[in-house]
Image (cartoon, rainbow, N blue to C red; front, side, top):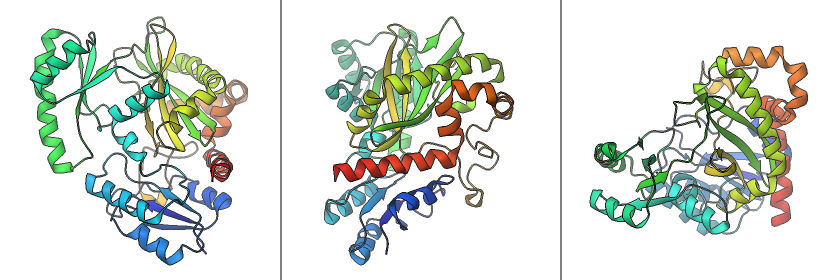
Length: 367
């Protein structure tokens, strides 16, 4: 009866298990879906034991921002007991590369994927030893390996800031690890790759959506040049609209020219369907990969109550009033220049139709 078990975030967490139009598109291409708690160490296994004669796939969809090490071990244990049922998004083993940036960077470097230089350290004394052996020039970032959105991250511009930032991150580590029980939390020093376009006066990044062996869609993000973190779309200002168009045209070209390489970056981490954060290193004009996001924000059905006031039609994401008005008023001209953005991203029904159509083709070939 059920073709897919969807191993979701626990019910007591924010209801972000299904994005707008996502579940109906998965069922269109894969068959009936059974939703279960994927983080309680037993519900996925119980469901498979009950419906295993019809289940063909598992969608492992744990919380990338709040999953504890106990929930993670429970997911791994269930997966091992179930055996080799094809996964649709994350493999359980690959999920740790979503949470822990140093593991993703190490995998990428092994696979020849360009990403920032880094090292992991234990305390201040260890930092200075590591930094002497692995010199990373200022400015660089001190951060926790599994935090998100710029939290627990400090930009260190010079040696005068270093001791203070080391102390702050020590405090974050002590206050963050114990109460949240995250998976293998570490402190990292990471090279800050130059993504600031001095000519245009903006900092920039790209979010690109991969499904199977296809790049489905993506978009460019521009923020003020004094913002060191450019991966948060909510910082957009309408005065940057010309730069926004320029960088989204660039994104269209990148998605076509580097499609195979971008997909390789996802597969190298043991994953199938991700939002990939990429920047252009302005110093040498190369693509640099920063992280992946299996639960990338696209908007959520109104009945979930998630993001009310943040995600809203017609596009859900983006929802900035000025940007939405501009995209609507200039659609006739811009959709010809930004086809993947307009048809494959702003149209969320089409987006997830393409995601699961491509994923079905990719998973079936591999299995």
